Length: 96
Image 1 (tube, rainbow, N blue to C red):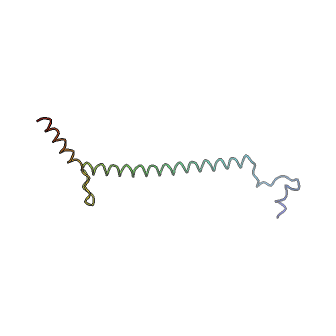
Image 2: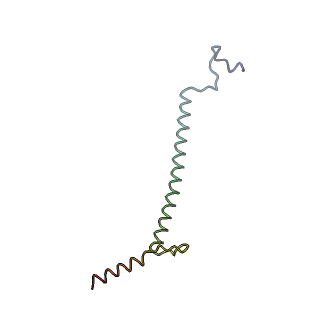
Image 3: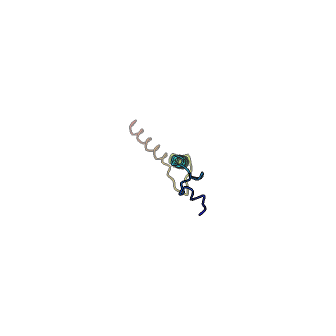
């Protein structure tokens, strides 16, 4: 080892490349703050993307059920005509 690294053993002052406990704690706090901020940003972006995807899929399914979007691969989930027929039958029964 070089003599410069062993100066403190001979009673001399610490070399200038050593840091104090306070400086180390400040660096740790800054690193933790950066990590927390990065985590919060990434979590927010992921949540926004998932929210948009779920909203789009819900809307697509809802519009298929009410008949605004045509059936996909022959699967017809349109319920509006069934609802209209049942309501018409009930109204006719009530008025008769």
